Amino acid sequence: MEPVHQFLHQLKQDQKLREELAETLRVENDWNVATHIAEKYGYKFTSKKLWETIQERQQKGETWEDEPQPAIGVENASIQLDNFLTAEDNHHLLEYALQHESDFVSSLTVDLDDTLHLSPNHRRSLMLPSCSDVVEGVIHRIHQVLPEVRNQLLLPSFPISGIDASLTAHNDGHFYRLHKDNNSIRLATREITFVYYFCKEPKPFTGGELRIYYNQVKKNLFAFKLIEPRNNSIVFFPSRYLHEILPVHCPFQNFADSRFTINGWIEQQVGSSRGANFRDLMLTLMVMISRSQKNQMLSSFGT
Ligand SMILES: O=C(O)CCC(=O)C(=O)O
Ligand SMILES: [Fe+2]
Image 1 (cartoon, rainbow, N blue to C red):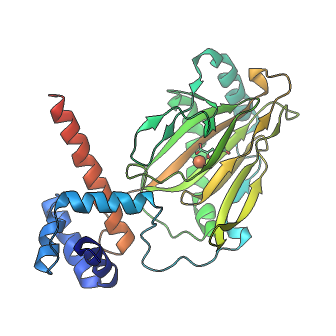
Image 2: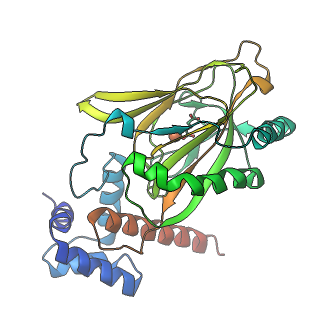
């Protein structure tokens, strides 16, 4: 095994080493200290090697858990709450989306290396940039139900750094193929995904179910749960689950008949519980690395 993998392996096993690294990261606020500590323990590699290794393992879908995750029962895979907003707020969102039809643009995907792409074979839908004003009401309600959601999903409480959200529309032939929402370094702090559905009544489209793969049964076989996109309902599930949106059929292709959502992510704040476990420590490193990469990019642009 290469020294960098050996070091990560020891880090996973060794609570004292984790505490030492966590404390040094906190004091120095510089991810390069990880290589100094590794060297002290007899593992020699460069910061670049560490960065590449973490990135590579993250891209392969590593979840950085100390222990293998227990199998989840279907009832704890996701939670869907009906009548989430008042009927008035629900109508208001639909009106808002319809009024802003001409501002919608094609949705992009974030690649494993954090670059944004238009990928029509992977994702086809529209989104409304800058709609933070209408999203606020949904976020406010989310905070109210969060304890119940965590309970149902068997997720321990964690410090939240923020809730990010966007407004999307799926019309005829639109879909989003299999993906995870936290599968890049920049998105690794996403813990819980939510999707609030709204549309005209009666529902003017068919299809568009959300399929959530919550358990790996065998190598390539997953147990999944199918979520019906009901108007004024919201679904929550852990962002690390694979999921996909099945193709939508809107026979008349009117924009107003779209499957609309406000969907987003509850993000874990890293730092406050640093050192407690391997995953928090890896998240901390990832956030520090991506911040320093961003700074390097900015300085190379001369800002
Ligand atoms: O619209 C949905 O049901 C899910 C959306 C989704 O998976 C995403 O935007 O990442
Ligand atoms: Fe997603």
